Length: 285
Image 1 (spheres, rainbow, N blue to C red):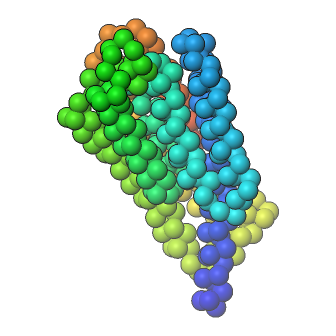
Image 2: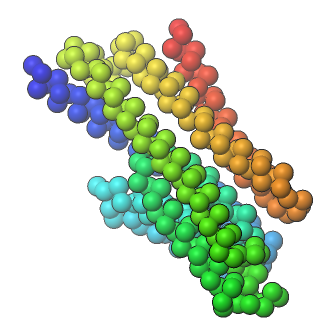
Image 3: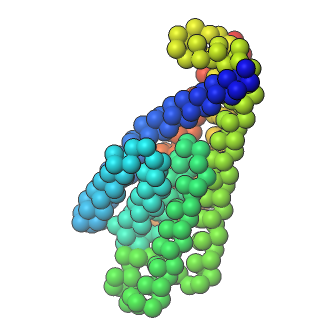
């Protein structure tokens, strides 16, 4: 009896994970579309069509190729992490070294939480560190003319101290988002493990097939409510980071792009709040 219950639990966990992955993939489709179109928009503004169209297209092809040819593996998610980091470098180069565009990778890091895999933060961290170090090297040892190609790499005075500060701050954000991804996964597994009784598992299976079990629906609503509640903190952290950045610059162009990023993050925040509110009503009823 216990072995059968354990098997049902594993099946339910597998089905739940598959459903969450499918929904996450759907969200990522929209995210990649926004990131690609942002690169095209910047190309019109800064006359960087080769980068905006070329790198953006390669990024999209790289992700969907990995997803198509590696269907049974989650490797495509790691490719996605790399692609999102490359988009950050693309934006910085397109905007002639406007380094504040690295906030786009912070937003990407937060979005990756939906896969509940903390390891997806590792490629982001490595690429950001490599990217920052490369910028510092090129600015200080390769392109030394302030009116030349240096502006395409960084408008920041990128000495060693600045490099360390940026790397540490980025690592803290990635660590926080990695922790939340790990926490959500553990929370999901623990929640499912508590439903170990065979009778309850059979009711959940029947509810998934016929959408008629109020008990299973209530369990799911409680889970959605708690998950949405836990998602609010990292999203709010990104919004606060953007607000802090807006308060430290008077560059109109930068403020405009920061506002664009804030609007994107706010949409995610509104979606989480909407899910949180609706699930709260269902749980209370």
